[in-house]
Structures are given as structure tokens and as C-alpha cells.
Length: 287
Ligand code: 13P
Image 1 (cartoon, rainbow, N blue to C red):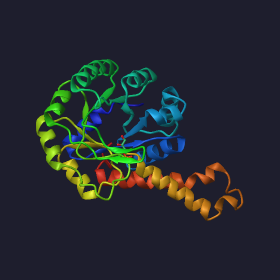
Image 2 (spheres, protein in one colour; image 1 turned 90 degrees about the vertical axis):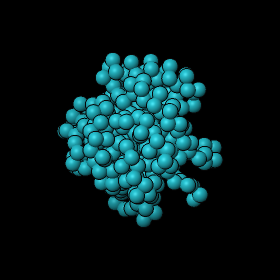
Image 3 (tube, rainbow, N blue to C red; image 1 turned 120 degrees about the horizontal axis):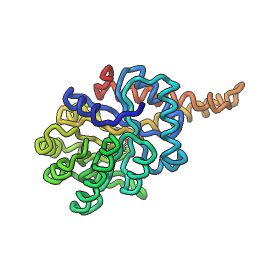
């Protein structure tokens, strides 16, 4: 059964480790992540962006697939199904569809509007036992070929949003989605430290987990990060393994064209990436 992410992240923050949110795109992705979490006895959060939700035929399809897998694969570790960077409307769609966690990304609204919408969604989510993440300080990334540097959140705004009753908070600390540019200055631990001092026990979320060096990840966890989002790195690993299979001509040998064979190396590559992250984040054995 899907669970809210509130409890697992409270435990992670208190235990000084982080739970990975791995974004899903299809059945293979989801199966690879769930299998790895079960093998490593680790809690896990499956992230679904609005685009990926649409690609997978809508949120109800995703909920049906994930619930089916939890049962058929006999998954016993805590699993949350989480809307990633949700708009106001899509937060409600996911609450209706049966997600166990949502993120309302109101970072682009003026702070008053972010407060009003977050307040309303906190009540709606909690009425269903669903956890909710909010964001302060936009997280950069590539848009139309231009890489925007991540903003640093204002610690007072973080406190204001944290006090609305959200279960965990994403604060921009110079992190960005996708690959980091060569001139990236690194995470702002000064900002993270200030945010944690204002928000106390609140589990903090680090977006843009792909490509952040291991020592920065460890330091971020020591300063209160309890959830780390990884998306691009699984995509890169999947695609590289698939390319290797095709370039080696394996699809043209015997029944190598069978999609179950074509997708197998990519599946294993996702598993290896998720394992490496869970080990780095310290969530192994914490289910
Ligand atoms: P990456 O794609 O950089 O790993 O970021 C994932 C993320 O933060 C999803 O919200």
C-alpha cells in the first residue's frame, strides 16, 4: 500500500540520511526502482512530473500501475507516489487519483499567493492523509536551451511557508535540474544552514540531484536535507545502456529485437544508478 512521505522523511531527518525521489517514465522505470528499494530494504519516493503523468496516460493509470506492482512484486518497504512540481490544478487531480504525496510548486507566484494556495492545498492533502511539499526560491535548469542558475531561497520566506503545515520543504540553494554547467558555483551551504536554523525539524528537499558531487550531497544531508530528487541521471544511464545494446548490433542477433531484451540493459542501468544513490544517501536498511 502506498504511504504518505511525511513519516519516512521525519525519520530520515532525525536519522541524518535522505530518502531518494526517483522520477518514473514507464513500467520499466517503476519496476527497476521498486525492485532496488526492496532489495536494499530502503524507503523510496516515486516522482511523477506533470509531463510524465500525461505520457503515462494520466494519473489514474499511474496509480493503477504502481498499486498493482506493490502487490504483485510483494513490496514491503515504504513507497510514496509523489507529484513533482505540481501546479494548483494538478495537485487536485493527483489527490483525486490516489497519489500519496504531492508537491505544490508555487515558487513563481508572489509570496502572498504562494501562501494562500499552499494553505488551501495543505488542508486538502491532509484531509486525505497525503503529504505535501512546497517550494521557495525557484530551482534553475535548462529551458529553451538556456541554463538558468538556481536561486537561493530567502530563509524568512522558507519559515513562512514551513509554518503553513507543509510536511517537507524544497529550498533553492543554487541547485538546478539536469546537468550542471561547467561554471556552476556549487550549492550554497550558507543558505541551507540559514534555512535549517529557521525551519528546525522540517525535512528539507534537494532538487536537481543529478551531477551533485558526493561530498556536497553528504554535507547537504548533514545540514537537514532529508529528500533528494534524481531524474536526469536515470535517463542518462538508461539511454547509454540502450545505445550500447543497439550499437553492438545485439538487436539483430537471434531474438534480440524482442522489446523485453532491448529494454533489459537500460533497466539494469536504472537499478545500478538507484542503488548507488541509495547507498550515498544512507537510506539502505532504513525501511
Ligand atoms: P535532476 O533531473 O537534475 O536529477 O532533478 C530531478 C528533480 O529535481 C525532480 O524534481
